[in-house]
Amino acid sequence: MTAVHRVGIEEELFVVDDRGRVVPESEAVLRAHRRMDPGEELDHELFLQQIELQTSPHADHADLRDDLLTQRSGAVAAARAVGLNAVAMPVDVLGGSEPRPTPHSRYERMIARYGEIGRNGMTCGMHVHVEVPDEQAIGVIDALRPWTPVLTALSANAPFFHGRDTHHASWRGHLWDMWPTAGPVEPFRDLETYQATAQGLIESGAALDEHMLYLDARIAEKYPTVEVRVADVCTDVDDALLVAEVARALVTTLVARPESGEWRLETLRAARWRARHDGLGGTLLDPVTRSFVPAEQALESLLSSTRDALDAAGTTDVVTDGIHRVLTRGNGAARQRAAAGDPPDLGAVVSDLIARTDPKETS
Image (cartoon, rainbow, N blue to C red; front, top):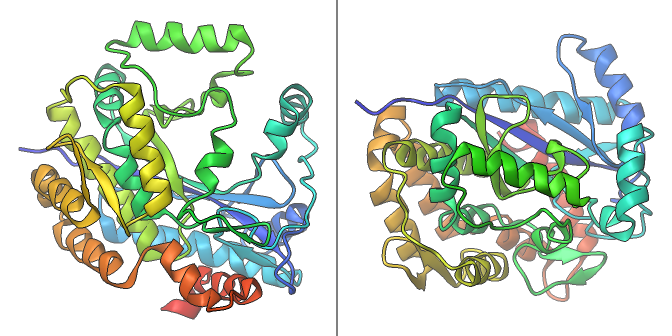
């Protein structure tokens, strides 16, 4: 019988004013949230322009959905209570907001050491946590490497940055790659090698600590999970849940059969660039055929490879219907381009992002 692994979501959101401009007002939003809902907590992020929410781990998809809707609704309500908006937007679309680090000693050390790299890190991602015992986690992380570009393409939600069209479906990932520990890695093969590599990166200065190991997938620092870190924050809750369930299905599948064959880093780098450039509108790496194929074909391979895991979690219809939806309607990047129109109106894009972040507006 295929095990059902619990899954949780972390989302980073921007704080935006009524003009659609990103503003350094996270403290005001967090204070409002504590007054309105003292039983739940939002958190700081690296910059005062950001907040972070997280769900609990769940085995049942309906419980995960309810939790994410609750967390989103609370963040949106707290921001509106102080005349602002909490927005699921991976990069600053309009630009003009100077990054202001949150006044915390660790964050200040990060900016002092990494300078412009750190300031370019003002992006919002979505991290998916899937519960996996440590002894199985390394095999999963190694085998996930050719599959993470599929998750990137599903979540791609950042075509516009600082008032410009990047001509990519996701620009966030390219900004994030400036961190020296970001990106695909060689296979670790065992926990000892993973730990030794992590320690070496810290000793080299490429990371201050374990929390700065910005690998595409890693063993979480605080939780007994594999943390998958390649997704843009998704504006539509259903897109976020689709990415989370695909990640869970992949992890569950790879716990049972972690072998993925040998992959050259050059191929993995090309695959993640293709996913960030095309989203779902071009080609993706199909890890089954080991070739670049139309996105729909790569997603068919994904569904076929994870069928047992999806059936066990009761999410086969959720994922199948979700993939059909994003192939038909488009992912977040396609939705932004549709909102922009021709010629592009990026103010309209941010207004649409604000509306679609709020579950009450889209339910």
